[in-house]
Image (cartoon, rainbow, N blue to C red; front, side):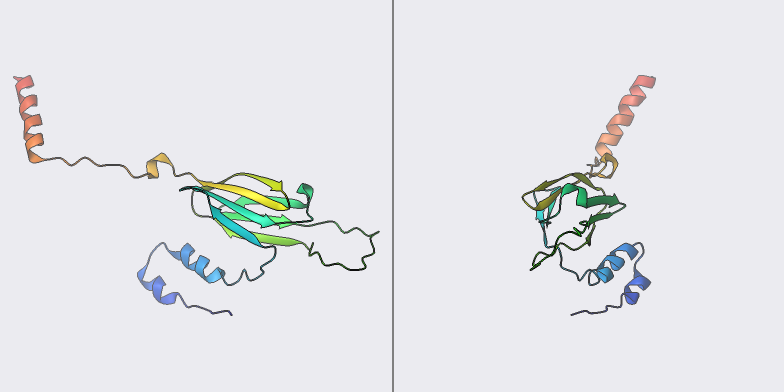
Length: 153
């Protein structure tokens, strides 16, 4: 089931949310559910994507981290000498895309028991982390002025 949503009313009253509306609009475009995958939250800022890639070797897989996008490609070279009597394994080429939030980095990837495990971590720069702002009171301000006045005399 595909629904086309019209976000144009939101564009009139919001600024800077273009990327979010594009993400919402593109969610229905990624309808191919192969290969299956899991997204696991390991901690507050740690995630893991596990993609079922049985039959693929490390040399058949490519992981690319672009700006806010993680792309996993898989392509197995055809064995021209093989004559299949039955081919039930879906070892077809694929490209799986994941939209990443700002400041999410790829820590590493490994192939284990037919699963491609990709570890992600959100690293927020220090200047963007919340900080406490001191509240200045009139009493503290006048006391500081009085001390400065005594030093000048």
